[in-house]
Image (cartoon, rainbow, N blue to C red):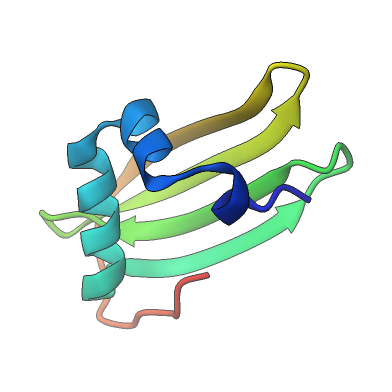
Length: 95
């Protein structure tokens, strides 16, 4: 399994995703906007994280992040898609 805390520094995350995106993600976690989160290791040993996040306008987004190691080092892929619905008031702990 990929231990992202050992392989990706905060500076590396800022380079990959931009400071504004990283700061928004941290703020969402702090404010409890992560509604659901799960993670698993796939058959290749890569980390797969999926969750739901309430955005700033109350729209719920499905988020998917994968990370792994290749011959070139660490790779990270992420995407988010809005479901265009307002968030319910119930929140689950983040992973």
